[in-house]
Amino acid sequence: MRTLIKDAYLVTQNASRDIVKGDILIEDGTIAKVGEVKEGSDAVIDASGDVVIPGLINTHTHVAMSVMKGIADDMPFPQFLDTTFAADAKRTDRDIAAGAAQGCLEMIRSGTTTFLDLYYSEDVIAGAVEKSGIRGILGWAVLDEQFTTQKGNPLDNCKRFHRQFKDRPRVYPAVGLQGVYVCSTETFLGAKEYALENNLLQTFHLSETRKEVSDCKRKEGSRPGDYLASIGFLNDHCVAAHSAWLTINEVRHLSRTGTKVSSCPVSNMKLATGGVAPIPEMFQNNVTVSVGTDGSTTNNSLDMFGEMKTLSLLQKASRWDPTVLPAQKVLDLATVDAARAVKMESMIGSIEVGKKADLVILDGKAANLRPMRMGSLVSNIVYSSYGLNVKTVLCDGNVVMQDRAVRTMDEEKVLSEAEDAARELLG
Image 1 (spheres, rainbow, N blue to C red):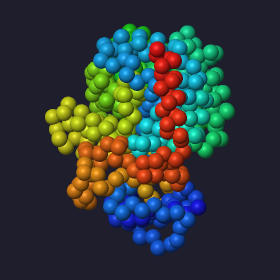
Image 2 (image 1 turned 120 degrees about the horizontal axis):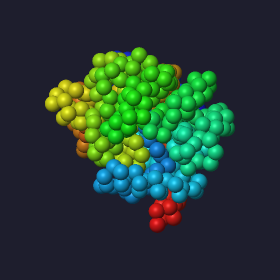
Image 3 (image 1 turned 30 degrees about the horizontal axis):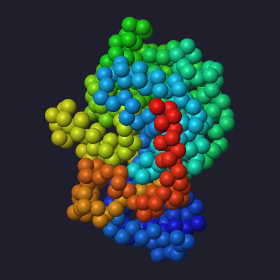
Image 4 (image 1 turned 180 degrees about the vertical axis):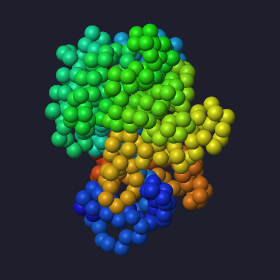
């Protein structure tokens, strides 16, 4: 199957960050040519005047929580936790599947083609991912048995999920550790051992709140990042979500071990947990940073365009420095750097020959994207765009949405089932 995308502005995100006016030829799901294409094709997508970017990569979310959106807004953090945990404890496979489908639909509509998830019942979520046509790196939640609502041992559940889904084309099993507040040293190291034996990504919450830090200091005698380094847990398969309350010493631990970071600015700001991720220091120490939305109870949106803009503005405002996190670097964090964070840099993250055709076409006629100038195009994408600008989305060369019509999911059915599930779960 050969698909041709014609006559667009191509924000390649290649090593030179080239932006060119031209075409993309896709053969059997892979980018075969970028530039002027004269060969024939089986299908043509006319993108005249539009903008093509690599599919966005959301490196931290809880996709199945989409049906819980709005249940815990504008609450102090302890009350937020009580509210969400109470709802979480009542969840069934039906509403988890419905929430995952709604979340995948929202991500398609806002240009995300790969996401890193952390939740339980990832076997149920995997079904929604496969139907949606996008790519899910699904980290089964691992924590001490005394703290979980899962049946059985969470690490054993994670292992079973991996064995069942390890050969699926859209689903990449991963190990998702909840955090230092519910995971013992034994749990961390057992999870690490299994992950490295099977070349699995590990993702976990790290230093999201000041209380998490102070509790860890009381329990383990050191801050979370220092503690995880001291027990030998951190490694280059790790993606640490949030990482807002880190010292420079902890940043150096991340650098030394190859641990990556997923910054979630909207979630942290909405919950008012304080702390701003020390991203400039992470860059100075060669830590790979990416962007995550977190779940729909802490963010209410899975739109990575909004997340990119917020991340840049938060860093600029907190540092009193408008040069911190410029637009090009922010786009890197959601594409090429995110691909590196999830160890898929050879597959996705840029528009280059040989990579998977994960592509997002933005409406070049939209008022907020004009004027259309090469020199300000990336700035427009980061500071002016939002998910509703997305017209067409391809993942692995397959068209999952074209001209704003989702082709892989029955949108009306997905939203109806999500509404029913939310009513049943939340009352």
